[in-house]
Structures are given as C-alpha cells and as structure tokens.
Image 1: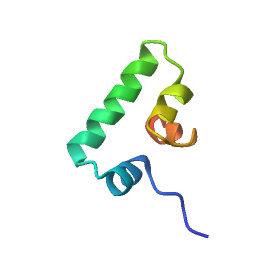
Image 2: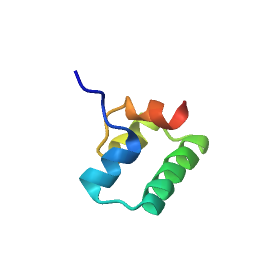
Image 3: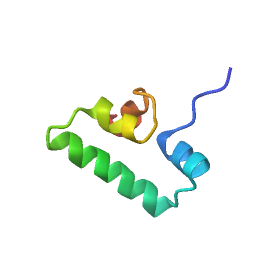
Image 4: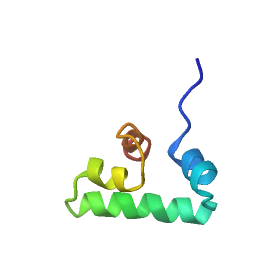
Length: 58
C-alpha cells in the first residue's frame, strides 16, 4: 500500500507548480484560515481532499 502524496507533491505533479508557487499556495491557504475562512472550503478550492489540510497544519 503506497502512501498518499504530500500537498507539495500533488501541486507540483498535478498542477505543474514550481516550489515558489507551492509556497505561495500554502501561505494563501494558511492566511485565509487565520482570517476566519473554513480550512476545508479553502483546501477544496485547490481540488484537494480535506486530509491535505493536515499537511499544512501539522
């Protein structure tokens, strides 16, 4: 059984993000959560399952 790819790996492979773009996406998500948006809604906008939120928070 293989492990799930990380947040970074998904954005790079699936969406062709650069390292800088991944960092920007991570910062955008975390900032929006800190401003009160629901983390599950924000992560869904990136087309990711809720468990990817754990990659960012922990």
